[in-house]
Length: 125
Length: 125
Image (tube, rainbow over the protein chains, first blue to last red):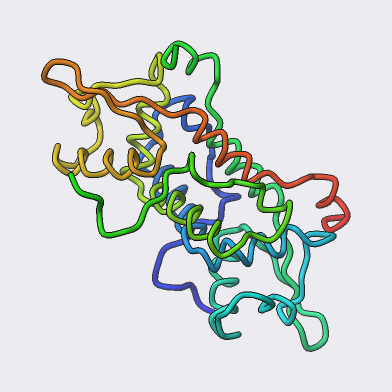
C-alpha cells in the first residue's frame, strides 16, 4: 500500500503550535494543510465520525458502509487517506480490518485551532 | 465578488456537534468539509496564523505579504476563501481592507475535533 499522490504528513509529526501563538512557518503550514485536506471530504468526515462515535472509538470496516452511499472500495480508499494522515489507526483481525481513532491526533488538531478569547475580546467589542 | 465555484458554508452555520458525539449526517458533513477545505491550503493557513498571532488578531491586507512568497492578488483570493468559510471577517478602512479572526468559528471547529480521552483510553491500553 504505497502512499497516494498527495504528500500526507501524519498529524503526529506536526509541530502543531496553535495558529495564534506565532505565524506558522512554510514547512509547518504544508504539514498541517495536508491533515486538514484529509478532513476536507464529506465521506471521510462521516467515516471518522462513525468510528469516533462508537463505543471504544473503533469499528470494523465491514460495518462502516451503513448509511453511507458509496462503494466498499471507495470507503477503503477514504479510510486509507485518514490513516495516512495519522487520524486513524488500523489493525487486521482474521478476515477484517478494524479502524480506530487516534485521539491524540484529533486533540492536537483541536489545540491548533484554539485562539485566546481574551485576545479576541478587544477585536469584537 | 461572486462566490467561488466551491460551495462554502460559513462555519457559523454548521451544527458543529463533536465528531465523536454521534455519526455526522450527510448534510452536516458537507458543511464541515467545506470549512476544512478552506484550511487545507498552506498559504491560507499561514495567512490565518499571521492574523491570529497579531495583537488584536487583526491585520491590514497590506501587511500580510511579509514572508509569504505569493502575489497580492493571490493573497486576496485566499483571504476571500477564509472569509467565505466564516473564519475571517473583513472591514474596509480608507484605502485598505483589514481582516480579523472570528474566534467563535475557530472555537467551534476546535470543539468538533474533541474526543473524550476516557472513551479512547480503553482502545489504547
